[in-house]
Length: 146
Ligand SMILES: [Zn+2]
Image (cartoon, rainbow, N blue to C red; front, side):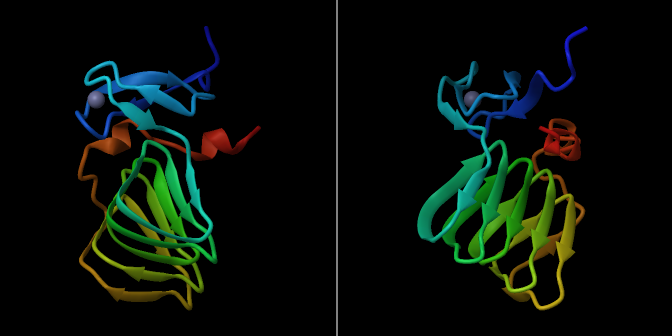
């Protein structure tokens, strides 16, 4: 039996097809629509503007990071230590850190807001699983081990 961590299930954010990828893969092409997919975690270290910031992994906005986007879709979770201005959806957990600023709507499975975080505005739906993503990203803690 192969190790459970050898593959993980992801969902295409273009056509919503679900498929398996190797855990070490960084980008893949969707077998359904053949579009390129980002599956790695995206770490934002400075000010960045996007139309859509999408990954099958996580989006992490570091302390000096500032994301301005129409949509942030991070299937495995979002962590904000800097500033996020976007409407965000995730099948995972969201953490808004102690000096973070959040502005925008959010749909997430779980939400943790640290003391000192600023939430400027937005409609939050928690717990929510807008894309049925929870089934494809049940646990991330398992993958923390090297
Ligand atoms: Zn696709």
